[in-house]
Image (tube, rainbow, N blue to C red; front, top):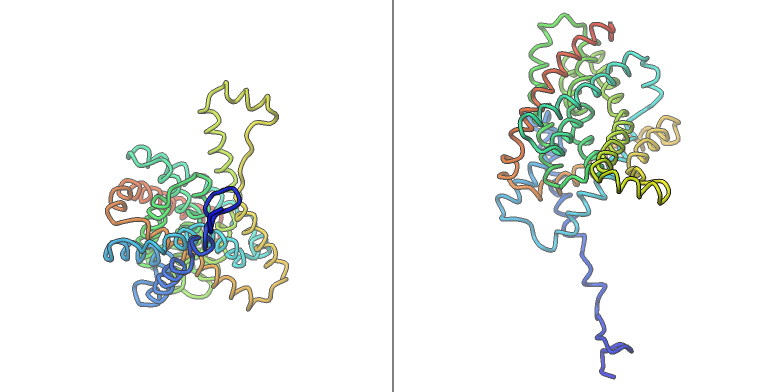
Length: 360
């Protein structure tokens, strides 16, 4: 038998462990871009974009200006844009105190539920009318209606969306939210809303948590507290929204597969199962742990900080997979749909805040 051959005659794979994809170069690159996004977010005028969007844009800029990404970084980038992104969403549950949401009363829940139920189908309909990709339209609709980039990242696996679709949708929603945040701060002195009512309007209609905070902060603690409470209630609705969208998506595929295949699946004992993303239940579990006070507040804040870092690394990984030409090609029509949906969301939210007397 030849040296270096196995008993069955095939050559040995020397050093196979060293030929496995290495994660460190890609993890380092996405962490570097995430940290840069966080630092840029501290600069005047850029904070409203938030570190998540800045991480996406930095990833796109890196790919555009440096001619792509290193081959040895591909595995780590993929790991960041999938596993780390989902782990970050799980840890983000530490932001939520379900007791505070319950204490806010049915008005907050009702307004947020109405917004989500109206905005998602509206943006999807507009995107379809404008000829935008269906998955991209739905991702943008969810980000607009629920909680920005985090919602896009949570819904994307349910739709089996491509990385470029996820990145384009997240960036589109964040840019829209930035535009509307600036408009809100300019409109506030002209509106017949008290501080708390204005905070409720901002929290129930603006896209990212960062947008709601940026719009409410200049108008006092009462506005800020109400904006955070209402916005985090919308974040909590990410769980049922993701489950319902997953159920709808898989049933739609089953209908398209034809009656014969559906009947065959039924004869085999139960048809297709709805695939539920584990990280959505993880998000709910960490929210429950935080609500029950099992984790000290300082530790919970540290975990939230870690969550945003992991999500930013994931967003940087997604950005590294998208060039500006792709963004221009995919983003224009869905941006128009998101803009129309955001306008309606703002008008609807204003009317509901007045109708429910939220914030006085």
